[in-house]
Length: 565
Ligand code: SAH
Image (cartoon, rainbow, N blue to C red; front, top):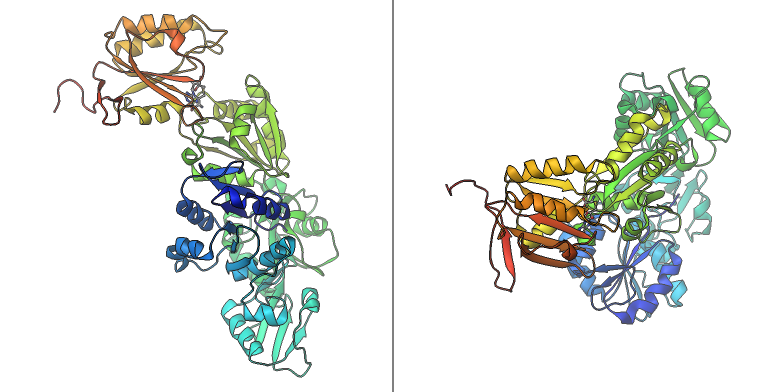
């Protein structure tokens, strides 16, 4: 069972060496460096406060190489809102101090000790229970769940007040703890999966060792699962996952049931009823209760849900936006973080990174779109979480349509069972328009000038009609080495319907290093000012410009047409 990967945040080059040492401890952890202050970080950020708060809100453990006070002040506005919190640590730039600040239940002290050991210093642990007993009783290892936090806190303060404790059940991790054990104690730590109300002075810890297999036809699945566990006298906290036959992978009932129960949903191939299903999938001896539609399997040891059956595969076609990380939507960032496999044109895959060592990258040539789409389904159908990357928006001259075409053409039930989602991005025309002002502020027409997948004659026809209709025009793929003359011809057609002074915006590498934005006119535009990394926006008859105070010009197309209302 994996812990979330922390983010290491630094403010200056002076911390880079310490950050790299800490990074060794956490495979996949990225160093976030302040723009213009840090060279060689894995990710660049511009605003310390916004970055830290975003990480915190996404439950990412934070290791900040700066003064503890800065971190506290930055996160303070968020602290009251939140029950559970990720670990947050401040580490001195030179590695001489490690201070766990927040996230006691998220394992912050464990991290502080790990980091301190690597840096050869002592962690500044301030949690009394931890100091005394060398472990946090309220933060059992994965595979176990704490019964009730509030009761737990009282329990630990009783212990700290000098009481002794008795341990019932198997708690192997407590063997190393320096607990004041005594068989006659009033205080008891009870470890077990049996459903019970805690007696006075009892801390309940549940092993996660129970799997429920269910038939999707069962009415009210969450209710039925709770009832089956109750009948078997098993605590809901011991439930590891819900299991179903892989023929039921697309069932929304099951998906919602697992969500409501707060456990993962896993699938296995069925030959027999749910009892067979769960017995085969758990892979260690179980005792079984239930009937042919719902079966409860109890294992002797805690179970890792990732080892039981497989999940429903997922395929997300994502848009990175034009390039800059700030213009990538949060849902896309989250999808990249959960991906097992990332497919795409190499430039875009590199733009989407950096990636963790456990993430597989499949880079292909830009022209192999259908093959890439099919490969994505093959991987997702195995239960993997797959991301196909496009620049801008995936639905605009990019991979989303190719992926849907591949699915449409396929009769493979496993492909159709994949959880497919398209996540949007900021398309180049919109990113370019935003920088210029609002040239697409009224009706506009988006076209690709590439005749790779459509005849040139239809491009000419559409251009002619769109220009005649007085739509503002956005040209993707305006020119390339194999298509040298097409743009010139396109501009001729447009010029038949537009005046030479019509504003034109050229955005090159927008949102990427070295971006340029140029405002010119139709009469002055020549194809040599444009390359394949350029977005061409041609105004309509109402598009106008006026000077910006910083220099250059604003371009916009008013919202009205004809005469100003
Ligand atoms: N899906 C992408 C478009 C892919 S077609 C999107 O929604 O943006 C590729 C064309 O998009 C390029 O030839 C160029 O015309 C334009 N383009 C893509 N990214 C760009 C950027 N950052 N700046 C300017 N134009 C870009």
